[in-house]
Length: 131
Image 1 (cartoon, rainbow, N blue to C red):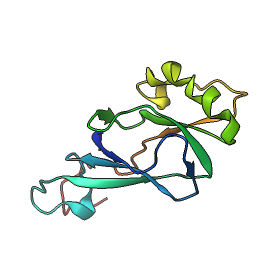
Image 2: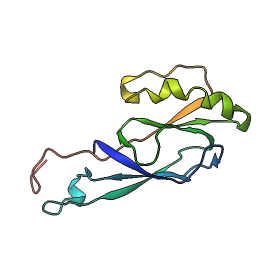
Image 3: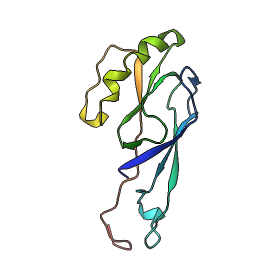
């Protein structure tokens, strides 16, 4: 999978996200994995992106309807509610990052970036082939 479209934000700026809370939905047509390959699978798949730790959603970096590549920062999170404004002010610097895999984050901040990660990869193997 290489890209998707932000279908809907399930958490809003200023809300507390508990670990495993659903934060946003990403819709994609590029989902290709052996488990889902049925001839020429075609169709849209909605992926649910969850918080991997408790944090406050300081800033949504990608509006609904926008296309984004895998690895694109989608939101800024902070540990404490009183850090929301400070974290949101960093949005301009982070929003320009196309992929966190090509960018080193600055250390010493209590702000975290929520990244859309895809653990599903396109297969280069023909279906039915041996490993």
